[in-house]
Amino acid sequence: ESFRQNGFEPNGDYNGPDGQAGYGDTQHSVDTSRMRADAFNTFVEPVLRSRPNLYVASEAYTRRLLFEGTRCTGVEVQLNDGSLVAVPAALEVVLSAGAPQAPPVL
Image (tube, rainbow, N blue to C red; front, side, top):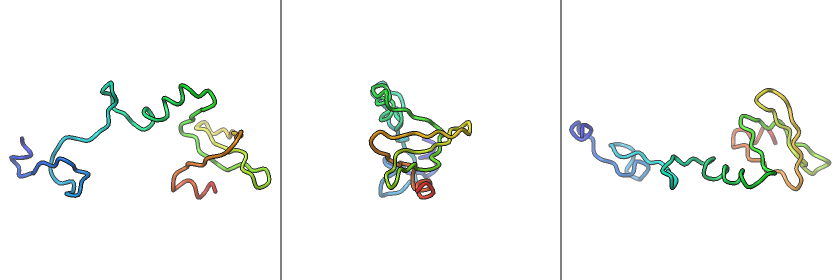
């Protein structure tokens, strides 16, 4: 009510074409248990439970790709304790380091 009294208009979609001015409910994602749903909880965590061959290391940085000739066979990562670990690939390597990090690795 105080927003309206101070001249602000309601904004039902602050990500919409009318801009972000105004007030309204915050937009967020919740799962069926009414808990906040983020990308990790929604997409990665369910797969981790069913894939014993999948490991996720947080705060690990890809240092370089490992090659045998012209074939990429794995990656070398630096863990948050500073240790370097070579991670071999059985079939393929998918580099998903993001726009800022992929070029230095390549």
